[in-house]
Image 1 (tube, one colour):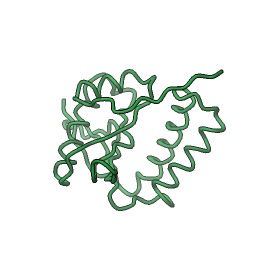
Image 2 (cartoon, rainbow, N blue to C red; image 1 turned 30 degrees about the vertical axis):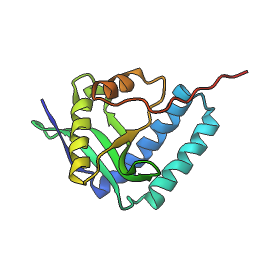
Image 3 (tube, rainbow, N blue to C red; image 1 turned 120 degrees about the horizontal axis):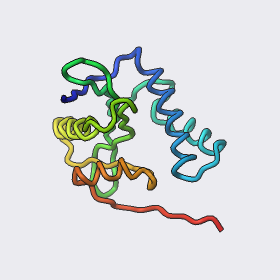
Image 4 (spheres, helix red, strand yellow; image 1 turned 135 degrees about the horizontal axis):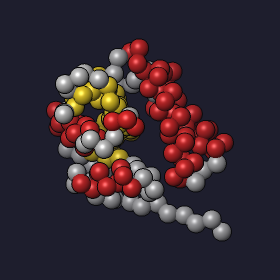
Amino acid sequence: MGVRLRPLRDEELPAFIEHGRTAYARDMVDQAGLTPEQSEQKAENDWARLLPDGTVPPGHHLFAVEEVESGERVGSLWIAERSSDFEGTAAFVYSIEIDETFRGRGYGKQAMLLAEDEVRARGLSHIALNVFGGNEIARSLYRSLGYTETAVFMRKAV
């Protein structure tokens, strides 16, 4: 079965924001070593900056990932156009998530390939993303799609 992307509907945005912010905070505790208090504050600040007042700014594109045959929503994808000093404007994947009950079926890979089509259609030539070091499933997916690591952040508690 395949997937398609469709723009997120206005009425879906509040749930997307709440779920995404909560998952981001949880991932920072589980995979980045932040305390729950630190992760909550960072998540609140980052999401408020990126989606101010719960609105989608120009250049940000939020999608529902849907199964083609059933039309059922199986996940979400958030990409945005960002400028960098060395690449010009590129796409940045802020989040991709396939709902837990649909994982392991190749939907994430298909959604990322569709994201590449979206990026090319917008005239951009690069996609960048961040992934937590402990998220081996995501890292493996990105490597299988030809992504290369451009930076690795490390730390040690002493």
